Image (cartoon, rainbow, N blue to C red):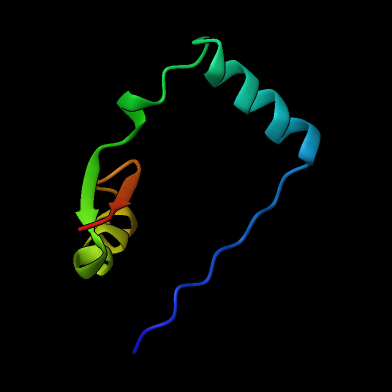
Length: 62
């Protein structure tokens, strides 16, 4: 079994601002998601990011 750990390093004020900009369409986030992978292939997505082959790998439900 593998463990996924996340980290979060920003102020809540900045998070709220980013969510607001996305909600009002001021920031387009779709172009930032370069890969979509299933949970079974999550490691491939992480590796693609490490190799700089992906900007953002989105893990989607199967």
